Length: 114
Image 1 (spheres, rainbow, N blue to C red):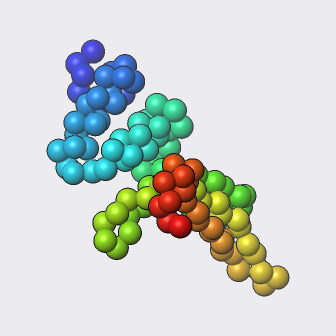
Image 2 (cartoon, rainbow, N blue to C red):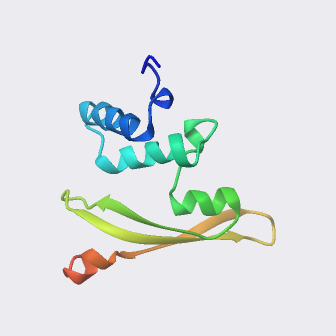
Image 3 (cartoon, rainbow, N blue to C red):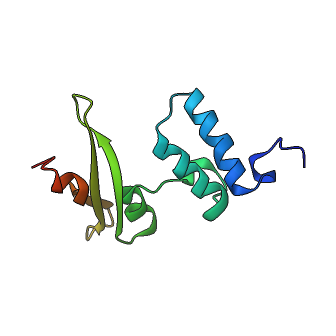
């Protein structure tokens, strides 16, 4: 094993290397978890398909989707939110989705987003 590829490493070691790479580029911590999941848990053929965003999942897979995400407000404050998305289709075949967001339990308990 040369260690040249993340996939040649055990997942824990690969995740550590991935975290270092992401930190060097200023990427948020949650991005490491997203990438690690797509490398070792639910691989994809191309990175463009690697999304967990409920709105995208609802449109692409024509099914409801839910996730807990972290978003930033315009003043830079970070918030944990829950998001559910539902696919919609018109009688004419147009497709889309509707997403609903609300504060996640931790933010709601602290009065954030109220």
